[in-house]
Image (cartoon, rainbow, N blue to C red):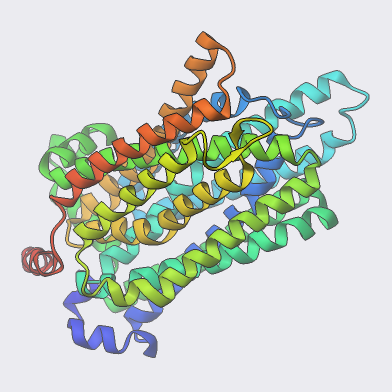
Amino acid sequence: MRGGALHNDAEAASSFFQLTPLALAALSISTSMSLHYLAYSLARPATMTLFTSSRLGFGNSRSAYPFAMTFISPISLVLLLGYGAVLGKLGPLSALKATTLGCASVLLVSGFLIAKLDGMVESHPTAKIITKYLIGTLFVFRESYVQLITSQHWSFLSSILTPNQSSRWFAPISGLTSVTSAVAAMAVGRLSQILGLSGVLVVAGLVLGLSLILGDVAYGIAQKNGFNPADEHFQKTKNTTTSNHNSDGIITKAKDIFTRVPTLWALFCEILACQGLSTLLNVLCVTKVSEVITDDTERAGWMGQFFATTNVLSSVLQFGILPTTSTWIEPSTLWKGMPLIMLAVTLFLASPKLGTNLATAEPSLTAIALAFQLMKTMEFSVRRMLDEMVYVPLDYESRYLGKEVIGVLGYRFGKSAASLLLSALTSSFGVIGLRELSYFTTGAAALWMGTAWRLSNLVPTRKEAEEAYKKMKKRG
């Protein structure tokens, strides 16, 4: 039974911060997700700095970064299959526990191993090779796991809140993750000076493990008060025990969901295009930063400040603007607006006379960083809110299984596809300059606009979403 069955919309919305069971469960899982993002925001600049380190990683090689990104989809698929197996047998809470503890363990062990190998790379060539590829593997893993855990938190929230509640509260909830991400990003530079980059990874692993406690609390509150999403899982499992569909693999089930819910397929395609653009801008930014800032610690601090600023900007939107505007602007309008903005920005970035360092004829670090920051700000705030609102009026399988497939494979395959394209072009034509790469961002922005506009024609209005939710509630 979903939370809306126990509380009507007016009561739940007005009492959300009065710590009713529904509010307490939502607050607990939101805080758990915030800690997850705090850990990720510590690990992200640490792994990126290690990866581009000339002593421990791959230096400022322009081909290494996109090549590594091509491995994200295969690793994400492995993680997704593991999640699907645990979810099918033990339910959503056990899946959250298994994935969170597993990812936290990888960060902890990697941190200790890198700290051990760090002192050996100068005198042992083998240790240098091992360290280099350990860091490469960790970089790919860090890119792969984040959406796996994030989607599970949002699945819980979309299962206990109604469409009207979600349109009001999803932006502030996302704001909590931006706040903790900003705190982590601002602290990375100082922490790396005190503990080293390997120590930052250990701290990230500990924080991620800690987040699980609050996730467990949220499910416990939901179970005690009769709105546990796991009840839907076990009821569905009971009803399909004698059905062959129950033994279908996760990919087969995902295809069935996409056929049954065309909006989710359109969302999957939109994510592929969006992440393709985000990856191209990411490659531009990382490459330029590694060329301009050669000191590892200084570069880690710059990246930390970059993402801290991005999260502060996202918080302003999530707390101060989106909760109000989302009540009178339809989601379809916002879906159309984001790619239009980025198309204009990438056209500016690709212009030979604008945003260019005249000494090198390549886009300047400032222009690249601003474009990437705008993209990430919209991703963290507007797009994240819109993405999660799609799932609220949908059934359990769409919210937990379909969402995870889209979240993990969609986000990561988009990154891998863009990176694979860059790697193929590099192999065929040599190193691609940043000027040429900026042209690709314009094409990616145009592709994103096409997929987003198609999706905007399928997403329901706020009124239609509320009606669909009520019909689903009556059926289940």
